[in-house]
Amino acid sequence: MRVCQESVDILESQLQEYMKSINNAITTRPAIKNLLRMCECARHESARRKGMYDDSDEGEIMWEILLAGRPSDLIAATCCARKEEPMLCLNVGDKPPRLIPWACARVAECQHCGILKKLKIPDCRTLSECDISDCRTLSECDISIPVSEWMLMPRSGANKKTGKQSTQLE
Image 1 (tube, rainbow, N blue to C red):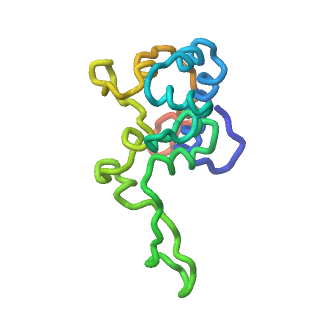
Image 2 (image 1 turned 90 degrees about the vertical axis):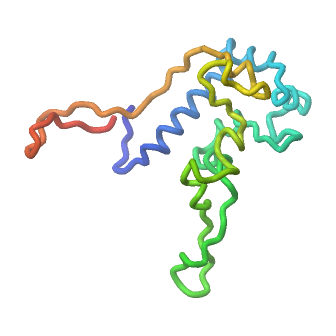
Image 3 (image 1 turned 180 degrees about the vertical axis):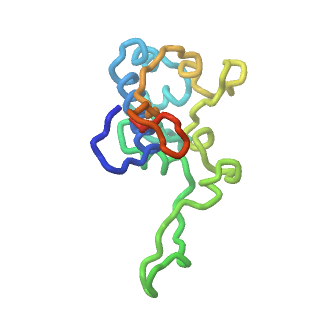
């Protein structure tokens, strides 16, 4: 993947690529589209009854909708609400910045957020590890979705100090 920018947030760019690829697969590939259309899990049933993929009765967010948006929206949906941090004001009287709580940025510390708790995305390697309430259609789906990834690619020349091949992200 080539990007004509001087500075790129690699993690956000990679998340955007994953989101775009999965969204395209869900919305345009007939095999996946039909699987989701026929899914009998409570989450997808509720979304079909409402005629849209929006917040369900249980307050769950339909993460499939977030895939068509910005990476920052998907990240915000998986974290606790932002809190004002008055200690970080630059000038007296300025409006304090709103940041996600520190515990949310450290995955193991927050007990209230994350993709499992907020978006109900199954994180299981085999079907036996999945919770029954998860969407079995998505858990059992083994259809490959190609995505672009940032990789270190060799460049001409070598590092003068180490003698190793020069590389750059592409």
